[in-house]
Length: 87
Picture 1: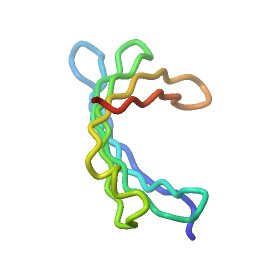
Picture 2: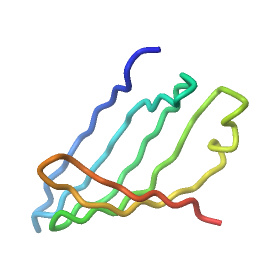
Picture 3: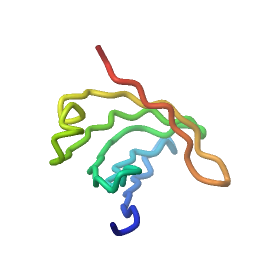
């Protein structure tokens, strides 16, 4: 399986907050690719996002129906997120 890959776009708004648009492919430990995309806002190093997942492998089909929210921080080593599935 190829390594995970992705891209992100950032729009700096007039108030200096950032609008983020991220698309990436995650790879599970058992080599299943999962497409993840999310938008959100980054204000003063604090991120709020709404991730979605798309996967074809039936073992992970449940992810296709997850609405998630993410909160995180962006530091010198990159972003760190906590992702929660809404019930």
